[in-house]
Length: 324
Image 1 (cartoon, rainbow, N blue to C red):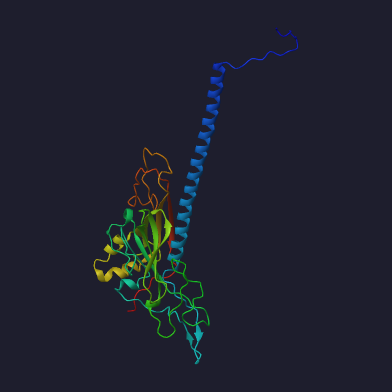
Image 2: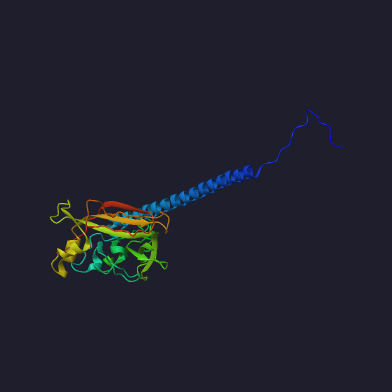
């Protein structure tokens, strides 16, 4: 029996197959758009994080290197104590003179395109295939001991490249050998990533050790402000090999190094692999600035982000000539 017709009853209809397919396609498009937005945001976040990491590495490495260079040749002229006879004693022996031809007596010295051993006091030699042509740099300076603490307790004002406080020289017979050491060079870690290393000796009789300072530093270059006429104004900038070539003989090399009044240091840092995306071309980088076109680095198209840092440090302390 047919149900009676009621004028207020609503008519119910289902969705056709076409409408269902259109709705499914629209829903799929919304999901795909949301997924693409999420993946893009995630990639952008990762790229920003890597870029920040690269900047942090450069900033930290520059701060450490700049601080060490400023300490080069430091010797404390302040009296450490007054002797029983009323004479003033300067424990740091700031008036000690270096030898004329011993490289270890230089407060600033480096090597161009140098590979450096992780142990020992060598800063490497020129053209020994440094990582990406990177240079080495060695800095020496006296530490400072705490007043009343003897000659072995540092006061914390002078530190090496690892941040270890360095004591002043012995009160008895101080010598140039009492100075602290700080080396900088680039080497590859176990996973082949380049790092800026610090080589140091934590105590005066201990062995040399090397520790990574900043990961991703693939280029470390140094040029030196050369003051040939002694008026404290540099006439030109030279790398380590060019500077030593001016000596003409091994005996005169130390004398040329003591004419350095400033350093210009450049570094290139890179991110982890694949962060920068595909690259169709790369630009040549100039670690120590466009004013030095001869010092350049052509990175591979490996999809990494790269940044450069360049800074100049004028030496605060005179690099002494040996006593006549």
